[in-house]
Length: 406
Image: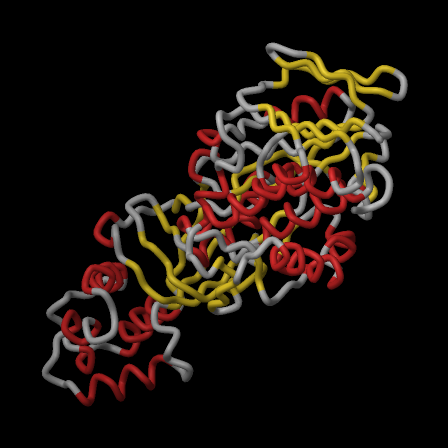
C-alpha cells in the first residue's frame, strides 16, 4: 500500500482520490479552501454540465493535439459515464449536454464527496501547500501546519482561472521546480475586447454565425448566441473561439471575427433584402431591420453603413445596399484582447501532454509525480469538455497508483 498525496480538492483531484483509494492506498487530499469542489458549484450556471454526447479532438486546443485522442478514447469516456451512473447520478441530456437530472451542481459535488468519504479518503481542508521536494523515491509535501512524506504526488491544483475559487496558478510554480517546460497559461473561454467599441449595442443578445480569421486566414466557425458589450463581445460561441484568439494574440497575430447577424438567410443576402423590402416599401431602414434584428443592433449597422435610419432601402444606390448587406451578413470586428483570468472559465496552456505518459498521467521527468485536470495543455470548448478532461485524467492517475481494485 502506497501513501498518495493529492494536491487540490477540485474535480480531477477528488476523482483521482477515489480511484487511488480503490487501489487500497492511503490517500490524502490537501485542499487550500475551507471546502472541496468549490468550482463545481459554478459550472453550467450552477447546473454542472458534466459530460457531452459528442467528443472529437477538434473540440480541444493543445500544442500536442496528436495525443488528445489517447485521452479521449471511447472506453475512457464510457468509464466516466459508468462511474457517475454507479454513483447514482441520473442524467438529463439537453442538446447533447449532460446535466444531473436535479439541475443542481451540488448533486455532482455530493456524490463525489460521499464516495470519497465511504472509501476513507482523508481530505485536509484549509491546507495550503508551500513546498514539494523529492528525496530519493519519496516526496515531502510541506503545508503551513504539517509535513507529509509520501510515495506519490498527484498535482490537481487547477489553473489560474477563477482565482477567487483558490486557483491562483500555484501548481505551475511547483511544476517549474521540477523543471517542467510550460506552455504559457492564458485566459480561455473568455469575453473579447474589440478594437472599435459600440456602446449603443451594449446588452444585445443575438443568434449568429461567426467566422474567425487569423492574419487573414480562415480558422474556425461557430454558431450560437452572442452578447454584445460596450467593450466587445461575449457569449458561448465567442468563448469557443476565444481559446484560439487568446493564443494568437499572444503570438502577435491579427485576430478578426466576421459576424452574420441573420444566419437564417441561407441565400445571397442582397436578393433576399430586395424581396423583403418590396413587401414593406413604406418602411424606413430602422423599421425594416427592426423586423428581424434588435433595434439597438439595427441602429449600429445602419450607422456603420453610413446610412440614415429614415432612409428607404429601395431608394438606396447599389453601393449603399451592398454596404448594408455586408454589415448584416459579415460584420467585421478586429479583436485586440481578452478579459483576464478573473473572467475566464479556463486557462489555455499548461503542462505539455508529451511530457506525460498519457495512459497514466505520470510525469516522464519525475517518477511518481502525476499531473491532472486544468494544469494540462488540453483546453476544451464549452459543453462539458473541460470537466471531461478532469474526470478522465483523474481516473487514469488514480487507477495507476497501487494494487488491485476493490
